[in-house]
Length: 397
Image (cartoon, rainbow, N blue to C red; front, top):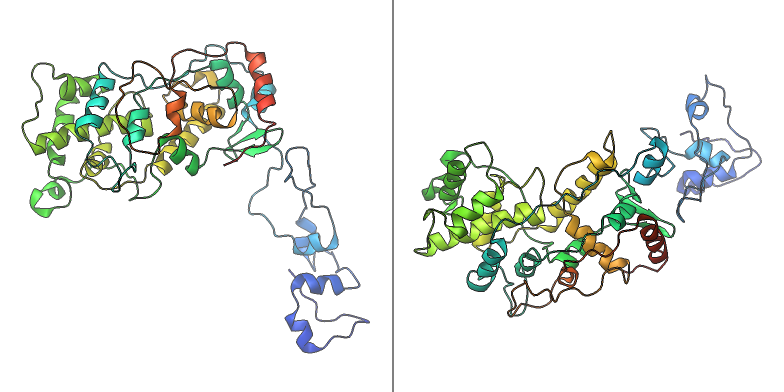
């Protein structure tokens, strides 16, 4: 940047000059500065990108001008002004969706019964502190349902994903899943302490230090006992605590009740909130599950959204093909997001008979309306037409 002190044929008071911005000073100049490389190497090396309004209403529209040449900031890295969605990548590389399967975590035997028992008999700290308010009670209920998965519709939506901006690019603008969406559609809390998975050092688990819930050491010991191969699967975890195979666990007091609840919160977090890496219990999740069990509020919407963004990034940037990624991810959030904003794609399916029915706190998460069993669409071309049709409708958050 260069500020010139001499302005021929223009008379201004000294105080007036000092009060003017660089942009105003530049407009008053009657000549362009010398662009010789020896005098001004920055101007010679700098290139102003040309606008391309075809991609969105907010496309780059800057053009080469004196002001742009002098005062346009130099970007630290080359900027990409073209959208590169998964669909663009698929077409340019000649890829396809052969052998594609929707990867999601399958519920272990009697998982629904375990969750219903928690909500009915052990939900003291899962509801809000005020009457008719919700903390994660409704979100746990949403994990008990099954969701209609239409692979063609899902693939059509994924082809609109741009991993560089973490947005879906539709003909009428960019849209993405927000934190507010995660809260309203899934019931995941926005406020609370940060979510962090870790395993405390052994000396910090001493009950006399009061650093962690008193039942956390026992929960970690059970995980270590079950992890003969280095992992603890959902089924082994559910069999030990709820199915009680071989008389493994019984509730004989408050400590056992909290341990039983924390064990379910752990599998709920690993299956519904932040899945990844297979149907296994992450040992680092046990600390968060223990705190939630005794009433500490943890912010769950941000880690869930980050995990979803990461999964979409892995799918859209796979070096071979998006069909080759085999990793469980939160497809249920994407299904409900389509149900909210792509109108008439999913109807009200919450009358599934397999779900338990009893009084719930209000308001209910919107994911309840998506619980279903029957796939809706099977034709890839027709789902692309449907997607284009519904993205032309104005969206409201």
